Length: 150
Image 1 (cartoon, rainbow, N blue to C red):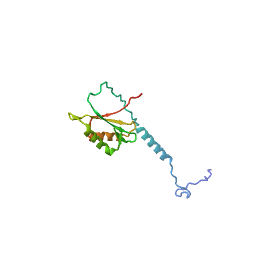
Image 2: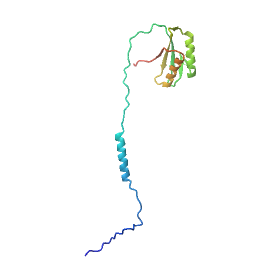
Image 3: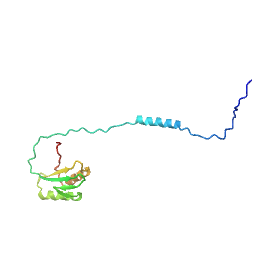
Image 4: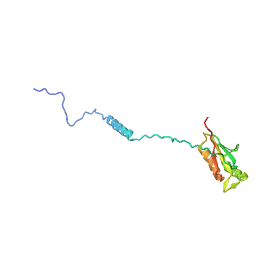
């Protein structure tokens, strides 16, 4: 004969001490799948620098008698015109005065040459301000000074 089992199954009553629990393992599995999907579908691009070889020229200096005006731009963005320190607000007025003093106009082109001597670490905005001041003074013959590597 069969011995009666010590456990009995009851259909309708639950033990009162059962606490609800949240199983986090499926949630973590879903998050890992989403993370792997994002890693695979994301494109990683590398920004490459442009390889530029500057041209060389073997031309001689211009025979025209150009009056040169040097605009120095320092590392901290200060300006000097022919060695005299000036600020941004006075830069255009100083260039207009220089162009009116010794300028001769030949075929609508001024004989004043603007040399912008900017420090290698000068802010781009300061160099653009010097270019803008030269444009405002109607000076179009603008060159940038550089040096050769030793």
